[in-house]
Length: 376
Image 1 (cartoon, rainbow, N blue to C red):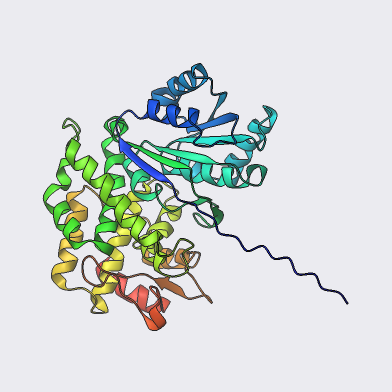
Image 2 (cartoon, rainbow, N blue to C red; image 1 turned 90 degrees about the vertical axis):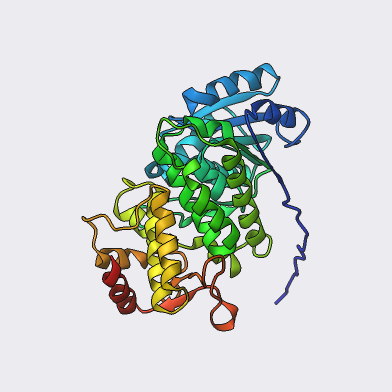
């Protein structure tokens, strides 16, 4: 018997910049011309049916006029289309047009577009570079830092994917003004999550300022508030990701509210937005944290009041039962040995560390059912 050792140790620098500003298409084009993705000779501009007529058709013209060979690929908007089938359709379209390993992806849109496009880029030609151009508050909060890319399945969300870091992220706050108010509020759920898990000062700021963003349809978004929220979301998420890029432990805390939220999202067949489901999930984890003595009654009131002030729900849809929700939680990515695991707040602005430093704990289904049924 013979053995041959294959030494493949290497150090990879996956660092990248996040640029926060307004009307950043010219900046993007200049970056590409100056070699942001130096091995790329053509670009797949991927967007969805909502964003295409607003932004990407013009960007396509401008990129080609600048000498950047670009083709536009448009997927149908909506979380339900973040699927393996959509990914395969886009890949086939790229292959038909002769895209190869000398290509790069420019993803323009919200979290659905960035998640799917990043996963596509990570597998196409065994991996090509990509950039994210975020056009929603939700994607600025949730998809701009960390490199987690995935698609959904009928069983659960984000179960199939990989880590693939972008070359750069652009957060264009100007595009937030074209979002329906419901989508703006949806993005605020991830913002509230970040404050709950890591920054009590930011939480207090949101209590005093969140209505500058979650305001009536006729009221313009406050410029300074938008910029502050964009920066704080990046800051909080970066501080977690830099300590645990591959989600071995600490990064689990970014799933605060998602154990119940993702299950609800699947059960309601995406009729509620991701942010609306996370908002309910945040309220549920707060109820469990209260029962376990991790937060106070006042903390619970502040959390639920802030969610409501953002125009988000804290209650279950009437057509879905707690029993159904807990069964669906069994598909959560944190489940281990059949046990549903939760990440929980330890007051406002901090997270609970459990046995052996783990940031998630296994809870019996009967306990989850009984605790949630008391409040929901």
